[in-house]
Length: 284
Length: 265
Image (cartoon, helix red, strand yellow):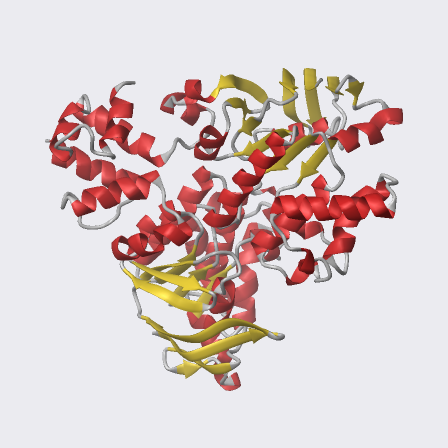
């Protein structure tokens, strides 16, 4: 069971002067139970890939399959959408209901679930995202940014999708809410959900995911374990900003030849907590 | 100077800001930090009279923001750029977008042309002056909003989470623009959730539940907010160097590397 892209290309505004190939002949497979981060700069094609995953858009060329079902198969598209829960970058911008209960109930109702099951799913989903039941009668518009994001996530997980896909989930979240999001991600994983996260933050991707897919100009430029990604030149060539410590240490290394003198001058012992940072770069 | 004096702000029955007392002087570079929903945006909107305090007062260069006769003076002095550039762009071309605010201020045409040129050159968008704004990237749109504000020559530039919708490259462009604006004499006040960005500021104001919880130099405030707000490897590394007496404040990537190279030699 997997999400599978086979020689997929996607062209926007085809046969117009604005024609643009956003995704170019890509093939990959995201297996069930394999959390993965999709990394790329703005405009690299990440969001197009997400939209291809749940059939919002269909490949211009090639094939996208979710658990063996082609997204271009109109008769099965509802099944694909049930399996793929897509949380957009600013999902709270799409709120419309007058209270949170109704907001979360919208998705499961559309899938034809009965009210008893919907109530159970709502209670379960707000518990997972860390909201209290007394919030259900409040307007989603009266919440803080972090709480709104949680309601948006709850409204997706209440549909009980198998794959949970997040587009830049932590942008505009404070560090505490961002940490809670990643804790929540672990809960989803422990409950057997497959999680996919799109981000432009190298730090976020390598900290929370072992498997990475890097997209640059609509093409796959890296697919593998995050350990293999820590290469400043490659990151820069893909338009990605290396983490700040990597940039600092690399600049010092370029100027000074190596980092041993820096390490020696700053740290009296190797057991100094921060000497690890310099050490880590020294070994490369 | 922007001065909050016993300022409160309520939204319906909810208290957003409580008894805020602080002064931000001309030429400062201030980062406002705090968790989501802690009152940062309300604080910024109070600074140019987009919101008025429920109790107490806010003054800009001695003018009370509640003084209706002088509100335009306040707004000329305090320019705000919001988080989402999309919500502030109105022009059909980049140039027209900058012109909009100037037309509202009644700036004469020849001066307007001069100011537009100057503002677009400053943010590096002059070559896009005839382009439709929707064709700009997210970072460029935010730069356009900076140009809009800059053309009105405000003393204080207030930016509400200017980088939260940006990728890291665009983020750095915006932050360096803030440094550049500060360099030519503007007072900069910005909010952020990213600890790494505090290295650009000279002062941090940390809000907690609508109150100023900490106010001071980044190297002092970082330690106090660590448990509540978190930190980063980049800032922690520098704090360790600061404690060892190797650096005397926090630096951005280039400046820190430069200092470490000198230290090495």
